[in-house]
Amino acid sequence: MANIVSKKLSNHVFTMRDYTKDKKPEELEPFFPNEILRHCIVTCFFIAIEFIAVIVFPLPWKFVNKPDHIPWFFLPIYKLHELIQNDVLFTVLLIFGALLFILWPFYTDGRKCNVPSFDDRHSRYMKKSNNLWQRPILFSIVITVIIFVITLCFINP
Amino acid sequence: MENKGFLREFIENNITRRLIPKGLSWFGCMGGLSLLAFIIQLSTGIFLMFYFIPTTKDALTSIQYVSHSVPYGWLIQRIHAIGPHMMIAMVLSHMLRILFRGIYRHPRELHWISGACLLILTFLMYYTGSKLSVHNGNEHFTVHLIYFYALHVIGIPLAVAFSMGMHFFMVRKTGIYEPL
Image (cartoon, rainbow over the protein chains, first blue to last red):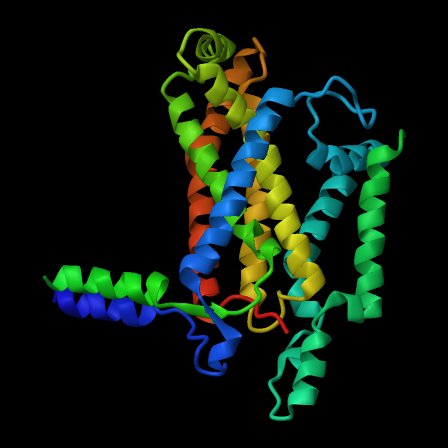
């Protein structure tokens, strides 16, 4: 019984995507040690930065005018609340924004761009168009939202 | 012997004999760093749970006790206070990379949804955690404090663990994003 369960687990739950199927050997590299080493180096950097932050923060100067209890990542939301001053409208906007953010892949029509093609040149073109840099309308929407969020941090209502 | 064979096969298939596409970006490690930040928060949070008293009268005193009287308590408390900033920075950069590279598209839509839920849960975790250290002598605040504490130490971490499990499961099934 345990054997059957472990086989089922290894076949369904723990099975990873096999990258060797549609790739040449020269297009592949070993996960161990290459990727493991990459993660170890990045982890060491992260821990070092966290310890520096523990010693240095809070910094004695302020980049923007804000109350001490508001962290940098809540600053746009805090400023938006100050701008709107209507709790119902603010809550509706927040929920609407969160839903738009979560459901982003479903209305950006991604399925067309990832259809594999036998024509390598065509397939590459299709794959490239996945990139936001090459989709001007989506790119302009995202950049506008990012600029709006950053601007919100610096305004004083 | 069977278990040893299964474990050996598991390690060989997933680590030592596994092959991945060449030329993966260093920025692809942001997701792993978010997990690392969460593990740091979890371990320091478990340590602080042994000393924190979730009542309006004792909350601030217990925090001060950890800072001043427990060996290395100040360090663990500082790491737990700085950690969310690092974690949110990592999650945001991970999501921005995925957004700009278009990695959220088919068949990875559910990765984006679970990741976005994880970001919102991380914000909620910070919000509930920040309420625990606020000093307020009001009786009603004690009830709120206990709610916030329960959400911070049990409710939200369970939701995070579930979303994280879904996220990793789907990443394993569809594979990582391959460079052109």
